[in-house]
Image 1 (tube, rainbow, N blue to C red):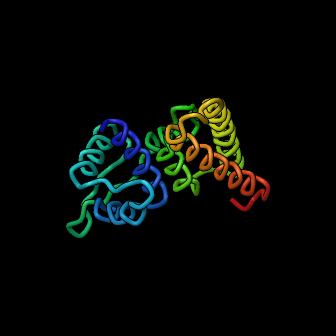
Image 2: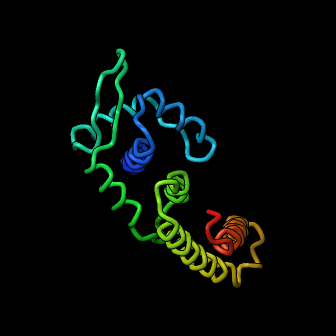
Image 3: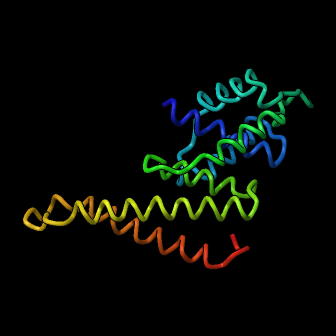
Length: 170
């Protein structure tokens, strides 16, 4: 639960970097990606906005009886720091996808470096999966999840190679 809240805060900051939004506007945007990253409830979105406001990462103003949220310079700095964190084996697919959603906030160099780090991460995962699959043929059902993971890693690597091969297209 905490991990999702932490991720949510940076997704909200990234959206607010684009333009000022109401909580409802943020919720509608997130719902459009629910098939990919899940959709937070109002019970998680508004506490996240409240925490961001308390940390002075966003401001809240009332305009035409609507609460409008804007990112502060401290919020922009926090977003840059989050975006610059290295990928590890533990970096979730959801976190990677959130970075892609927010990639409009990244320079071409930062995005390329991020995609290259993801490529290295997935190459390492694929190698680990290949090693785990060796010697497991005698139990045909055990390796199904490993085979699926290997297939998905191979497909993601192919996608990353295609994206990275066309500079400026990201």
